[in-house]
Length: 283
Image (spheres, rainbow, N blue to C red):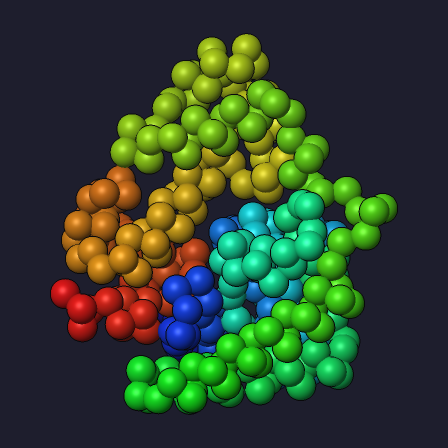
């Protein structure tokens, strides 16, 4: 039997509901997936090859890595058995608040960045978030220090690494028909449509639905639906619902099914997320 690949994951909360951090030390090969949040991280050790909205990219120790909300990614170690990285994730509403003068959603233009000032600011933010998480709610000064670092980091990110007029958002390539498929999948996660239903709704063949959806969003409709359920589960767990209830409300067969999909999507378990956000203590 092949040994399981190394995978150590930690998720930690923040003073704000729309921000959280992770520490990953992993040999896993992640398949295509997306997150509903923006991500900014530091690759601390090893190297990684990954898909992005700008094709396949490589990142090495010391590089910053980014993800846009809804951007399809994958990832695997490069030149070694494993890699270690830290990330901070921000809900789109948080990013929008940092860029209040922008008329359209923020788009990060580089999946891999070399920027010494931004790297330093991010490392301070990650360190302060870790300190806040370890002494959760113990001192308002900790939260203020975190907030200052968050603003400083986001300002540097927005000033130097966001969209230009020449950039074309991949999501704009999706036809109205394919967007209808996505919206239909999101409408009722407990009663998803069949591929036949989607074909009838759009006037396309079943093969065309599959091909065009994957071209637009990087994953099949079923994979997108599972990831949508994982994102919904993350929000419900944060609101304080029990894991068993969340699994039922999100359309998973049972709690273990939710745990498998959630862990595959985020890299950490629903229980770890529950502990990081403090929701288990509130129930």
